[in-house]
Length: 434
Image (cartoon, rainbow, N blue to C red):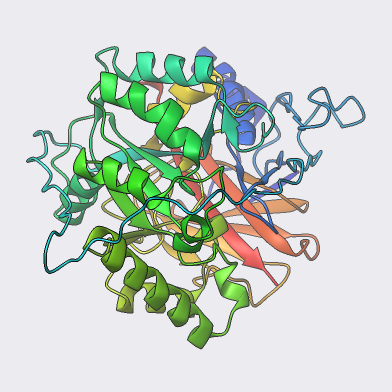
């Protein structure tokens, strides 16, 4: 770890101990920054890659890194401090096609299913919200994409405890697009891939608590009739009940790997199937695996989507890129209540002039940086790969430099700082590495 300052007094451990609780709080937050950095892994919709990260920050006490693996949760061979990298991949799943469904295509001209218009958003003065991402529910054989039902019920109990306002994603997006006005601790819930356990396990629990959520659907996964995915009839049931449906491409492809014509074909075919089956085309999108680049984003925008989500950690705010919004991903290894509460109470670390500007790297090692919009001390940054040096250029600019190229796939970096009311400010990025 290295830390350099230019035009700013360097911090020492003594400085960090004033006030006395700051170091303890900082270590607590760092340890969970490690735990919440993960996303869906390369190669299939059924795997999640989990990475611990090494901080680029001042030389403070090292927090313990929790290295979890689907095969060996203890990971005893891994280092006990940040810097170890654990990769988690679920066992391969071979989906089984079911008998032709009784799904009947909707004739939009005759009987359209129109997405229910969201109610007016509750009033408030917050300009940010936290969005969570799930995949499977109660499918214990896939721990890297699954949340245990007991864990999920604990999450719901926390969200209904009185400290949060759970709102539909369209309401959140519209409110933030219009400058805020949300209740403090507004939460959105999203689910990727339309697994059948969403319908059979999660929906009854959401329904019992009158809790809105969004399901991002890859249309071909349903068209193929695999038994572990929902059917179109099930999706229609959700829509009729007021659940938001979002786009997730046709094949759940790694979109930056495709030429732009193929990306547009994925989006066009997906839109056609939504129109045929549901009578409408969603206007909110989630990138498969969280992967995007400038051309992909342009294509998604041209397809009519007004907002799109990645898989980078952090709170979304009025300063966010609306075509690459953050979400906190959860699975059974990273679904403990302490982590959940930390994320649910997080605030945005407000930044601008982020580099690299494209979410697929053209330079490796990356030269990462951003400008702080507000004075912020004691920032800690955690790259998923590489030994990093952080420089503060005056009070505003933060620059991260890696000691060498990072591995192909996805490279993540989380930057955190203690905010008001002991709530962590958070800014995360995910880059695709060719």
